[in-house]
Image 1 (cartoon, rainbow, N blue to C red):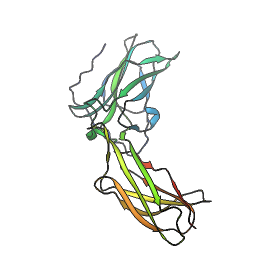
Image 2: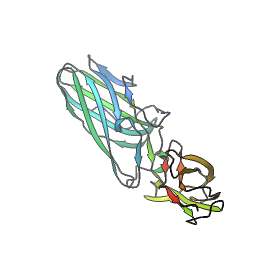
Image 3: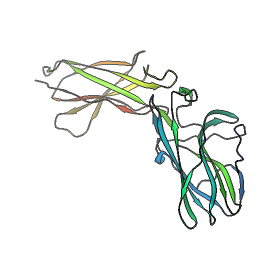
Image 4: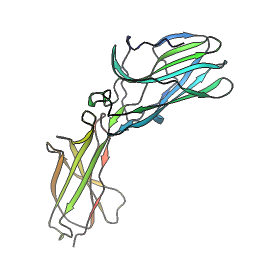
Length: 256
């Protein structure tokens, strides 16, 4: 029995972190009969989905409590605001387990080459899971559960020179910040973003932020520092909630 319609009154769930798992949550239920219970719904292992310009598989796992065999279970992933559907993927789940505890899983493929995936739906807001469970003894339950967010992948490059450099001389550090552009299915420079320049001496184990630099209209980064000792230079982008954080490969500079 498949009762769900794509046009309906829904609700938006906002998540305030990079990782969130829905456990023992109370959804906005469409219907519920019998003693069937949905005890947890976890998307992508509880971690935000990082999507580049190619397709990525995302697994949803639901844990159920039901004393009867299951007839069918649907775990749909969507991004919607009220009746407006931005993204929707529906698939019937595969369930395992004996006794009252059942585990149901489904794998969706998010593909930015599809018209449904665009930059406007990046981030944690409005992503949710529609769960519908039908058991053979007539028990039924359906409703929305929170999902993790879907972030645009980002990347950073770094170059420090000249190399080798004289101690006390000026060192120029450049790089570029780019992000997956789902609208054009390409990588584009990110403009006006604050990126951290970090340094680690040759023998150290942790990086220190030396300064913060704003990317130019094409995502390029450029700054100068004094070369005081041998060490590694890199860029770090903390990122807002719609993008994934990024750290460049480190560039080692020999200061003589």
